[in-house]
Picture (cartoon, helix red, strand yellow):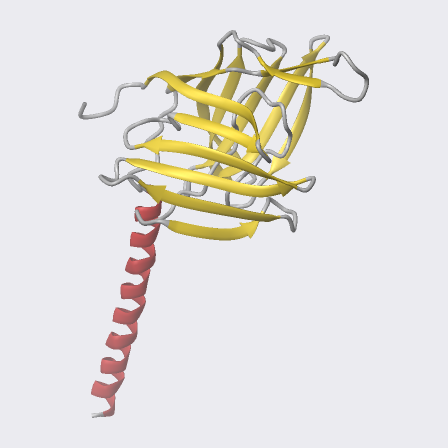
Length: 244
């Protein structure tokens, strides 16, 4: 009799463990394969158009003049490879541009949850590379610098397709960061808004993501009431997928 009870308890324990392992695995699967998370492959490329900000000296002393460059420039993205970065599997995405040929950026996106792990700005001076590295935990990323070429901010994709508000901190700092996610009526487009305060003004980064696209389709950053970086997806080329 005691032996039957023992086997009964053991069976219940094993079932309980397997059940919760299954729940966690399903959760990871849904997070990884959320419909709005791009299904990247090494070799995928896409092009973003931008209208950079130019600065000049004002007619009167007291500051700089900020104006939008009329000529359309481009940032070209390519998934270079999968790398092991600090024991974390990541996509390495290289972003080159038509404005500053001696500067490029590297984005390392975690394979598991599709968050940005590391952002690198590279300047090539005299044949040597100078790097600025920013590390980021598994949460939304906002690049605090203003006057950059392209909205390089990166969201944390929600596990479910419903409007959400996430309050966290920026990177490894205590600076407050808010992410707001909303969807259009037929759930084909996701709007992500990231907010963080910089020098007393709110830096707001807005991106629109669509199912089946490798990157956001349009994005813009505003600081206070001023519009800064803007971008629009112009085209993409994906490597062949199995079964397609």
